[in-house]
Image: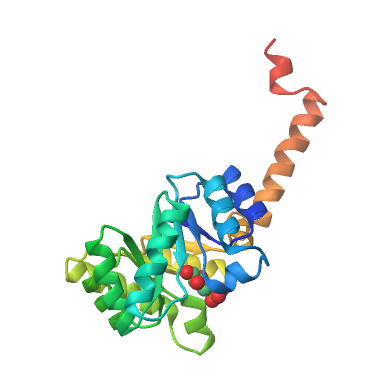
Length: 226
Ligand code: E4P
């Protein structure tokens, strides 16, 4: 599983990269605008924290093929490293996807809500397709099923495109898309913390500590191996 952070908050990115096995960061205009910072400075700061090897998925704001390509080239030049240009799916976006792939750039097709959007984006050459699970669940649709069938379609048609499942509110959603065989997931830091939390784990660790102290007091393993 590829774990990506869905935030542009540099403090949270630094903390998550220190403790979790993080493969990259995704942003979109909403996530960027929450930080109230200069766009260029912010994406450079994120790149400095995560390094050149981790993936950075930056969403463009242009809507025509020609402008998407110009923005993609500018972002590539500015931020460098392992970069994916996020493009919301549209006819212009698909044209830009094919063009950017021919130019050697990497693309994540985003704002995916159906299996067929994902399939055609894959055919256009997208490296990742990003279905929005929670936004589908919110309208009583089935986000997990869209991810599951997208994984199956890509396999059935021998396409190398990976599914980057996005938009989550619950650990249960993350668990179900992992079972469905998704390749990658992008999560906000709070959900990443929730992923490793269990009250019984805390109880178990407290029990270990109490039992040790009842016999050895405050001594630690290192004190006892001198
Ligand atoms: C990621 O690529 C998406 O932009 C993001 O996950 C959308 O999530 P939201 O539904 O929480 O805004």
